[in-house]
Length: 284
Ligand code: NAP
Image (tube, rainbow, N blue to C red):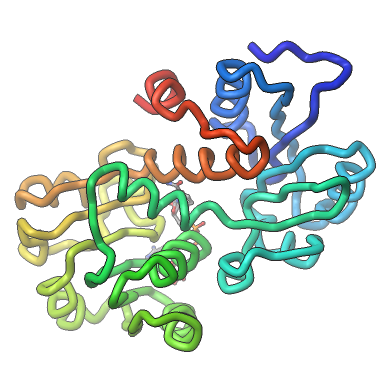
């Protein structure tokens, strides 16, 4: 447990809901293991209270904070500086306060890419197929493009959102991106044939609708394909079960959660999170 003293600096999570979040446990364990003088708390703060909460945290000289739903977009307007990735993603999930000067970052995408490296999945200079165009999908697609993925094909229910991400990638990075409706199974089948990685970044498969999969025909999944699902409740989604049956390597959603936290931890403290201790305790 973190020993709180007169010099302990506050780091927190601002979102709604936050009661289920594993972030306080993960960061406090890491502070404690490394003997760092920080404490992490979660605060129930919605979008309409965000500006006031940020003002209060600045006044108290908090070291930084994480943002979760629904605050990631709104936070962009409230920081003094945005990282280049955050600018493109139009989202901030981590703020570092340097004596009241607020710097905004997004570690969702970097955490996802770091997690792939940790699992030995190499997608750089290769083709990736992504389902989803919400906040998480946008962060993953843009970071993947910035990191050197050669081609990204995005499928989403609302096509306009997928098209916007593809346009932004094509305009600002060297990656080639295209977008289709998720209902276009012919294009999905074609895209998957030559892809190294398929990622589900939609809510499909998440409890209580864990009987659903974003891909219904498991024949589309070939053994050379790595299949990753960022949904982590349940730990093994229907999509991942189908992919395993097809002989694909699979990667679950907990790794992204862990590594986005590790990247934020480094931004606040300058230290590497003791990821494997945290993983053994909270992510098994
Ligand atoms: P979001 O911004 O609300 O986006 C939701 C995405 O799911 C959109 O692409 C949406 O399509 C799609 N979708 C939702 N219901 C659908 C349905 N019935 N049929 C087809 N598509 C549907 O949410 P988000 O923040 O990106 O999160 C997406 C998922 O990722 C959630 O399950 C969340 O728990 C998970 N997540 C995991 C991590 C992690 O660390 N592992 C981090 C962030 C998020 P439309 O655009 O058409 O609405």
